[in-house]
View 1 (spheres, rainbow, N blue to C red):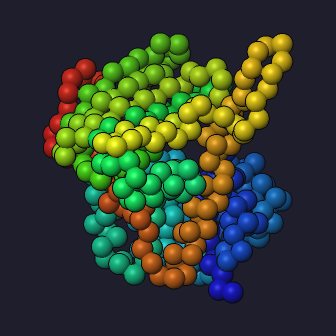
View 2: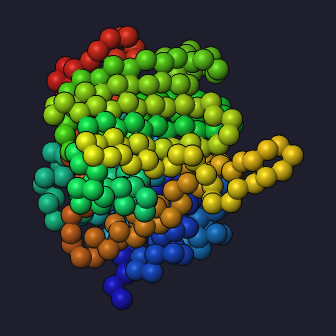
Length: 341
C-alpha cells in the first residue's frame, strides 16, 4: 500500500485530534513530523504520537526531504502564509478552515496555487463529510424535495468555551469567520448560487468581553443569493446545553432538517428532571467521524492525484461572504458582496 508522508503544524485542541487520526486511523498515511511553538505540544508529539522529528520552526520542518504533504491546523492568521510556503516546496496541503480572514491573502494563495497545478490543496469544510449532510446533498441532487430556496443554518457552542474563544478573536477574525464559514459553505453548496448581499445583526449579550474587541457572542445574518434564494445564518457562544449545529433546507416540494434537535444519540432519558435527550459537548464530538473521513479523503485524493471539491475557490468565496457579514455587523447596514471584493 502506498503511504503518504505527512507533517502537521499546530497541535492544539483540534490539531491533536487530526494528528491522532493521521497517525493511528488512516492506514495509507505516515505522520513523520510535527511543528508547534508550545513545548507541551512537542512533548505530546514525541510521547503520544511517537514522532522522532519535531520542530518549533515551520520553515525548518519544510526542509525535511521525506515530506510529501503538510496538514495545517495552526492559527487562522498564518494559514495563507504557510500554504504558500508549503506548495513552493512542492508539498500537497490540507488546511483547516478558514483559508484566511483577509480576502487579499486568499486571492494570493489562489494565484500562487495556479503555478502548482500538480499539487492537491484542500480546505477543511468538515460538514460536507458528515454522513447526514452528505445524504441531504444527495437527496437534493436526486430532486426529491424540488429546488432549495431557503437555508437556515447555525453554529452554536456551549457557553463554557467562551473564555477560550475570546483569546482567538483577533487571530481568527471573529465570530463570522470562525463560526459561520461552515454555514456559508453549506448554504452555497445546497443552493448552488452565490451570495449577492448580506445583513448582520447581533451583540455581546452575555459575555461583554467580546464587545470590547468589536465582536459578539450572538449574531444572525440574512443572505440574498443571485438566483433569488435566501439564507439565515446564526452563531452563538452562549448555549448552556451543548454544541448545537443544525441546518434546515426548504425547497419547492419539501424540506430537510439536519441535527435538530442536537441529540448526542438516540437514547431518550426519563427521570426526575423529565423526558430529555443528551447533547454533544463540542463540535468535535458532533463531527468526530466526519473529521476522520475528511482527512482520509485528502490522503486518498493525493495518492490518486485528484483535485478536491473543498478547494481554494470555495474557501475564498466563504471568506468573502463572512467578511461582508463582519462589515455589516460593524456598520449596522446591508453590504453588497461586490463592495468587499
